[in-house]
Amino acid sequence: MLASLVLSGLFLMTHAPGWSEPIITTDTWATYSYKSIQVTGADTLHQVWGDFNQETRVGYKVYLPDGTIVFPETMVSNQVWSGYPTSCLVNEDSVALFWREGAPAWYTVRGSSGAELVPTSLLIPDSYVSRPRVEAASDSLGHIHASFEISCGVCYAVFEPGVGEVFRDTIPGSLDDISNICVDGTRVHIIYLAGFDLPAYIQYDLEGNIVIPPVELVEGLDSFYKKTSVTVDSDNNFCCFLCYSRVGITGYVLSFIKVDSETGDVLVLKEIETPGLITSHPAILPSPGGNTFYLMWLAYWQSDHYVYFAIIDKDGNFIEEPYAAYDYSDEEVQQLYVLEATTNDAGDVFAIWSEGDVEVSGYWIVMGWLDHNWVSNEETTVVTVDTEPFSLVASSNPFTESVTVTVSGPEVSPELVVYDITGRAVKSIIGAGDGSFLWDGCDSNGNELPAGSYSIRGTAGGSTAAVQVVKL
Image (cartoon, rainbow, N blue to C red; front, side):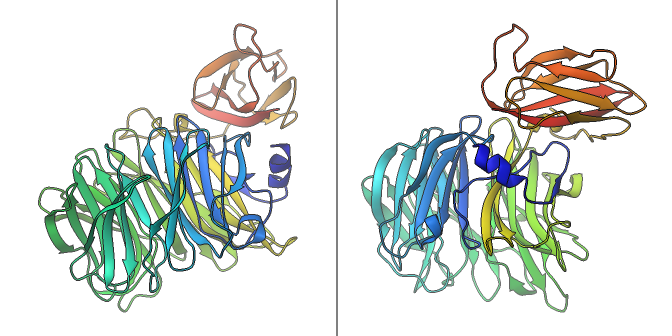
């Protein structure tokens, strides 16, 4: 854990309020590898990635947001060329991992602690043409629903973990390229390409029957970015976050599209303006309740790279305008690749991406997370945090036994509150009168708290400031 925290300090980047310091999540650097992340419980992160141990293999590990290792780095693929990993939750306590080994696709199922529930097994014997990733989601029965390409188009298949494939259909009119999938109750939603850069939607039931035939989502595109992200809102309508360029327009735009899950009608098509920014790897995540959505993507202009974040309502209107959650404009090598993100039931957001490092001529996989307490409990509003007119500075970070937080500015907070990673207030700290606040690493009952990440916050004059600290 300490090595990851120290290495993260080598990168000259700034993060927005509410976002953690990023940590390096792999022991060795790699290329800008494909990767995926899921969360079980409040904060147990399951990461799968390619270029494991600087080889064309697939690795897996489980860790906490403070870098604590729950399950060590392990190769889950066979000792052959392996790559393009993805993952999905099977239920709240287990995760399925997928990857390609040459042409065939393989998988394994792991428990919340990383223990093997289903060993590495063949999933799909078919070869692919140009899009090797297997997109997957599970239903309430524990079945895995997957979309993937083969030579005759995009396939939709259902698998029973440990048993094998129980259903397959080739989506009518599909090309051998892009697709994504999500399951909501008895509905299986799939987005795919039905023609040259023509995204379409189709809906199945759990028995494999087509409920809503193919629906074209948007026309007049010049090119379509291969990465998509999908989910449903609180009304069970299908929502997707796409990246494409239109005929006659330079550059990509991000688009939020909502489809009526009863009729297939396109209810919302909202293109997000990103002037001067080139964008990639869009991710859409529902907030608790599904009334609002978190959006993330990678953005760059010339040599400046950013991890962008925004919040929208169900109609695509901004609640929180796009901003740089992580700003790498001061970094020597401006290269970020392959963003993936997930969220827990509380609304914390966890994201991983590949970050270039000139010292090793490679990339580290790093993780950063958003504390849901920075977002209002009312899903239709967001608390805008202003660090002025005062700021908080920790005397040492990470720390072992105690840490002193100094408050500076024209106004001074009368007390500071320490929050754990779940957002629970664990202790209030009264200052010494000179703007300094000592935290002994214990809770309000005097019990020593475990190692991990904590947020210390104060409020004065209607403004809020915070500092993230790590207890070793």
